[in-house]
Amino acid sequence: MRSRSAMYHRIDPVLPVIVGFLQVFLTMGAQYWQLRNPDLGRAPLTWWGYALLLVGPLALALRRRAPVAALVVTLIATSVYLLLDFAYGPVFLSQIIVVFNAVMSGHRRTAWLSSGAFFLFVIAYATWFIPHRASLFHHTAVAAYLLLTLTVAEFYRMRRERLAERERVAREEARRQASEERLTMAQELHDVLAHNISLIHVQASTALHILDDHPEQARTALSTIKQASKDVLTEMRGVLSLLRDGAPRSPMAGMAHLSDLAERSGLRVTLEVTGQERPLPAGIDRAGYRIVQESLTNVSRHAPGSRVTVRVAYAAEEVTVTIEDDGAGTARAEAGLGSGNGIPGMRERAAALGGSLTAGPRPGGGFRVEARLPLPPSADQKEPN
Image (cartoon, rainbow, N blue to C red; front, top):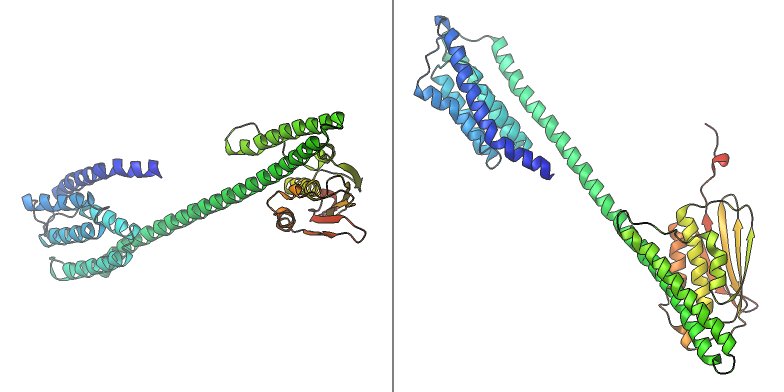
């Protein structure tokens, strides 16, 4: 947009000079031949004639600031020029430009009405003010000239509006995508921080509780804290690197890293995978991982020490992720820290992908979370054309 505007500013002072030069010198050439034909009834150019030839080009300098005034002044100057019987020539060049400019600047009705008025003037002039009355062909040619100018102007106006609308839609789409990306990043940061900070909190509480009686177990808890803090920093760098263009992007969390997640959770986790494992779409891959991560975080907060089973079932049309704990752990008051957005956040993730998530207590004790995430058909499942 800046380059286009700069181009217009460069053309504005040059165009009136070019048009003025053409109208004056080409009219002088046309006059040389027309004065030798007495039947045309042309008069030689006077200072009035030269002045009228320059009115249109001078009006072009104001066509962007005052398009209607430039149009009216140019049409009046052209009409007076014809009434004074000066030689025919490119005096209509300025008129073409100001009519085109009026349409493009949004003054369509003024452009059409003024062009119609000028056409009526030409008919009257060619009928009563020249030695030989003009034919119907002459009137048709003038009408075609005006209609062609207006039609071309309307075409370019509609084309420019379509391009402007397309650019506006593209900008809105870019803003929408940027907003969705920011929401996704905020959710990623929430999940990363909630899981790892909760893990650190639980392990730190455990270490403080057993430090005096079981120092070796406290050492294990501290090692878990060290690893969790390292993991949260690594994942935060991976998410925040998306804000910088060209920054190296760390691999995002995915289902392939569930075993590492289970080992780092500080819980007794059993991972079971059924069905044929295969690469998943990025959104589903990340959502499955985050659902497991949030579920383990909830167990660490509310029932630390429980046994957890994570089942991942791959099917043709969906992948099912189930997280169950036996509820054998002892809930602690301080373990209730957190935003309380875990289950709603997981449900939103699943719903955004067209899936579903259920969560609730198990009949025999403990808690169960199950997410069903639909998969797009693979290449071998698609019907041949």
